[in-house]
Length: 381
Image 1 (cartoon, one colour):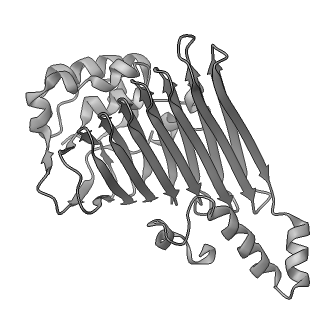
Image 2 (cartoon, one colour; image 1 turned 120 degrees about the horizontal axis):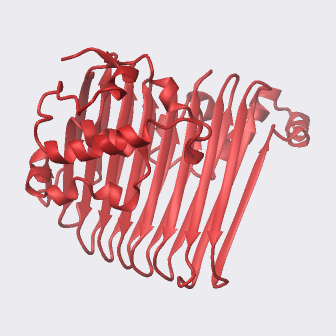
């Protein structure tokens, strides 16, 4: 296995085949790699990546595989799990993401070097949630890819836990949600690697996608989601709470593409930012002229607990007709001094008053009955 820096790797004349099993799907990988060399690793010159310079962040990470563990727990026989054999038997699906998004470097990077595959097909509604844990160890890189195929009339709950590592994780995940199905996702990010995750969902008629995210990065983290509403009456709701560790960074982007009528999307973020922390929220609603009766909402609220913390917010709406109901709002600031004074007057210390106010903000998205609640830092429970 070669030990190249990312800079040297990008100067290669052809696809590097140093990783095991990369000869499988070689034609598809080479096609992706050619585009990767043209587009490159994202930097702040890319509008979607204006708050994260990934190219510079991973420059000194060795281009070698780090140890990666994927654990999937389920108790249903109606769930089928495949690995790379799924794509060798369905080669057209390997490059499916670039049919929807053909200008995203991290997608081409994953398609060039994917080394871990999990394709989960859900045929009937499972009685219990599915638990997926991705954990990395040591330095180096890993390129996991997940595909969830949700058949019609399914109601499923899926839990993701991401943790560990000192290198770079470039994760690609896809959800094919068929008609009349509902997917509830609870995601926790505790990664100590530089973590880049691209989430893509394709929604058919009357399908629903709900994601509740708790982001506790211990390094630099980027989560970007691209939801395509392919048929009428589909919907999505993405709600995220971000509490990065001191000196860390969290970048959150959601792009909702309303390709069909009578669809709805909702994106929201709550950020608690301590010293040296930087957080970003980008949300884009795209509604074409012929698409009717769309509903969309964007909402961001950030609390700066230190003068050396920062929040970037960029809500966007690309709307070409009047048959829509859309709104957005952003609030960035410190805790309300009047509220703290009121709680002090009722006998609470300043620290206790601040904790109560922060708990109130977090509870808008994570209640004490949520599966995410136990992952919150003790100071916010």
